[in-house]
Length: 492
Ligand code: NAD
Image 1 (cartoon, helix red, strand yellow):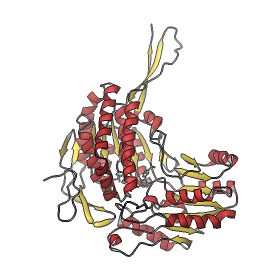
Image 2: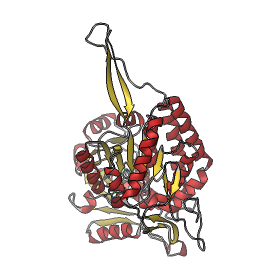
Image 3: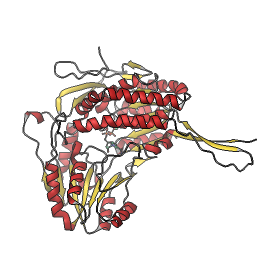
Image 4: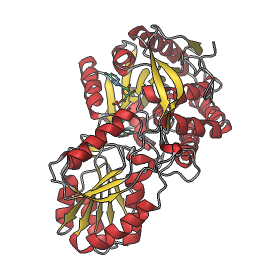
């Protein structure tokens, strides 16, 4: 049976049963339970069967990664860079196929899916460069004539646990720095993005030595938790919900191993009276509604100065109208479906229970293209209490809640009034307002006249408060996480 291959099969062809990629070979998962992995734009399209998996699957992969670490950690940075360049080329060769697979499996509009693949190529090239940079620094010693310096060394086997919404980019922005600095990895992808993860492993298989990159699809509780507890694992990098992040942190603390958790957000845009309202509305609409609001950095609240609420809302409505809600392979689709029926129904329930005024409500067209997809129309609400579910909980859908503000300080107070602190934007033309906001906003990603989503792959990424713990990801911050320092003193 063909198991891990790149099936784009539709009706009439059996979907693939995913395997693990361990020690450079494709192997069947233990156990015989399978999870249906469906296309969110058309749930009648079964993308793959994902193994539920078992704890021994995780251990087997951790052992393979530990065996590969012996050699990978001792080859030169130049040699590791060559492998990463090779991997970026392997992904580049399959760009369109990968983008189509992302669109189909996680419901990402095709334009953004293509952007995600291009970003993966850029990530691998960036970290190939990082692999040949300095690995320590010279520090003057107290003892005369002594040479004192630091060496950055890899941690060992790193467990990577990832969500479904950036099914290629998040696994890669963890894997690439881990490998560049000499670690080996085991990736446990989300159940609903495991087919794309298998394609990523195919590109790794032609670029990397055996055992350096291992993939164990499976359920979080069965395989993910066993991976976190595998004795060979020396560090954990997790991205996902706060609920699972808390479990990850507890296990890492118990084991006294390094970890980072990137979690949810309740991201905010602030619009001041002097803002370019067309720009503010266009970027707020994009930040809130593109990919149906399913980015951790999506704008879910907008705080608008009283004076400009009316004209801002009028422009916001026009901008949201311009974003096409459609099956994700439509070339102009911008919004797309929710990841699951459960996600859609849970947001519907929250909206139904709220007495906030609906100031914008889109419609899902009544046509065959939408009949089997998990679509939810864009919605904007006003008048929600600041302690309500709408104001406080990460909904992860195309829902934006508007709050009026008296002035900049009031706006910042409202913006900071959540348990999260991932991303924030301010729209203004006044540099003093911008500087005041940069100082007082509690967010890891802070924008002025930009949308809350997106980040350059070479810039640190992460949040404050309940959005993250441990060090930042990406750019120079990744070196901090994926290496540890040895301080060496050589005396005459
Ligand atoms: P999730 O927390 O449900 O799952 C994330 C991963 O954890 C999956 O691989 C899952 O199988 C695994 N998992 C579940 N239970 C586990 C357990 N007991 N032990 C070990 N692993 C377990 O998240 P999701 O629904 O896949 O993704 C959406 C969430 O991710 C949102 O909250 C979003 O904000 C967040 N996210 C954050 C960032 C960021 O960088 N801050 C980026 C993307 C997504």
